[in-house]
Image (cartoon, rainbow, N blue to C red):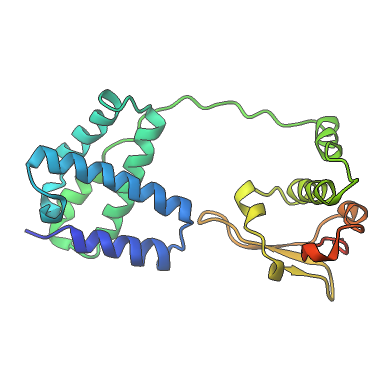
Length: 217
């Protein structure tokens, strides 16, 4: 029997943080998934989480846990899939650390995701995009900031997390103005050199803000 605690610690401290460079949101989501799983396993097996063994987290227990999420916690299919994704990621990690449990791991990896309804994402037309860009009034610092940020999002197709993750050192004005965008795990980092449009909205941005796209071109 193999204690599961050291492997979970290594999964979060080495696999997610160092190897995969997962975002803090991904780490938090995975941590909550394992909190739920270990709480369920602890009650079912009548053992404290620290004494749980890896071999006890088998496919029937995982399936029972997922069903409990839906029946007891009223989780939808998408939440169930998120928890299952965290467990499968851990099992992929364990394939190389515990070869003796490959059959157990294979059975867990074979658990299917549940089908969910896919929401139709409608794209904005040019007029709607322009209305959003024009919404902040460039009459004060906040308006100039918001308008520049919206232009940057539109020009680079940025996620909110990528926009809010920008740092002053990511901005380079020489020899050519550019901004380094830090992508999440599934998106690589990119260097953005966009249009000249945001330039006229940030000329009056106060220097004490220490964040300017004035020469962004």
